[in-house]
Length: 219
Image (cartoon, rainbow, N blue to C red; front, side, top):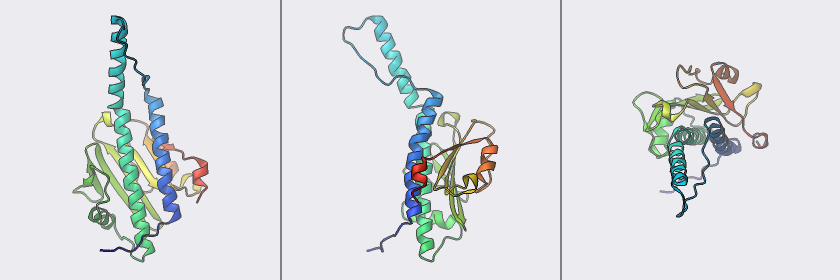
């Protein structure tokens, strides 16, 4: 069956690009915060016993890091960013066609029907929720002005802090294509209400990840 071509809003396309940049930026920030071992491991056939132990220790440390909080956090951020982007694209397309979604469940239903959920993510039993092996995602939808938020809560501490991906963002009384907020602690996190002002989110103990100015101005 042929489908009509979907015309995407330039703002939403830029949002998607911005989210990809944010993903790299946030993961890099987490890497610096948690600390990574040197990723180069040299194995010498003539190494002494001491050098062999050091090499093995480096390899194990690298393995633990790559399978630990940084890696899990990167996966969760990728899931949330992908969900937020595709939800925004879908919502904009339907609104432009005169068929805006009235509820978040309608939006989720469309995403599920079109098989647009990120890999390993599926719809949960509660309204607006999705489940993955890394935790729970909460999709928030605002019809006017159009807005998308995805809150990702990890299933365990090893999966990293909670995060929020927002399209668009209202930082400093102006709209930006997208933003990522990272909780500053693992326990006792206050989840802000839907589309709370950026200042309130930060006041609740979340760190806002800035996006490159060059991208934000290409709207």
